[in-house]
Amino acid sequence: MPSSEAFITETIREYTPRARNYDISAGGWHATLGRDYVDWLPPPRGGAVLDLACGTGLVSLPYAQAVGPGGVVVGVDVTEAMLDEARRKPLPRDSGALHWIKGDIADLSSLNVVQNVLSQRGGFDVISCCSALVLLRDPAACIRHWAPYLVPGTGKMIIDVPTEDETMQYLFTVSLRKPLGLSYVFDREWIKDIHSLEAMYEGAGLEVERSFRTKSYIPEKVWRADEAMAAFEEATTSTYKWVRSDDNILARARELWPGVWKKSLNDNSELRDGHSLYVTIGLRTR
Image: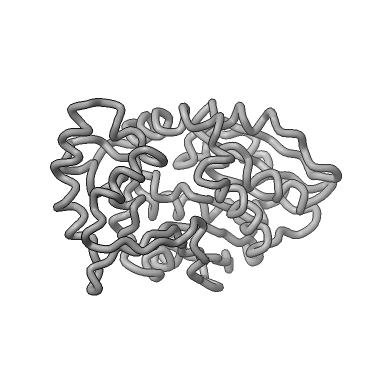
């Protein structure tokens, strides 16, 4: 398994060029998901929220508005370019204080703003990690590390992960990159079902309040078995342009794709593409 430093390096390399257009990419579904987080787990007025892997602020900003005056939101991310985009955005009216912090979310111990909230308020009322747990080298260890930063008895954590479905995203971020010998920042192979994330919460001493599968955040599409190359051409000219960045990679990818495609088909010889998520909310009971 790659080292923590390698995961960080790969994450920065992946997200730096995406930062400027991140909010509008893939139809802007990341912004919708950010707003949904606040609906799923509203913070108390005047409360404190820690948004881990905050990116361009798509979760942090709605939470800042939700906590209102007297509240505080701390957004932490490792990619400076993503934080630059967050800092450019105006703070919603009547929001709480909002701090953008560059740091490794796998180790919060050296982040002064986070430590100050812990000492002054006894912890955070909400800790969120949106679309990022699969970017971490050891997600279970991270959840165990984060749990003590919740207010005992009332603090809650909300995290999402992709489902185990073999979608186009999975094929291009994992299934195809592996045989090409390319590194990949997404580690989602540990996700077997909705209970995989629940087990990590329980291992961190959190009580699972609820888990659910979301809607698909991109339009769902069904591909037939004989549409392998049509799917390849469409995907690599829109979302997964990295395949076309090198002629050798493109030629090899075209060669490998039929085998990757065949393994991904369901019992009906179809590939059902979409992007649903598993979301789990857990409580720190003590």
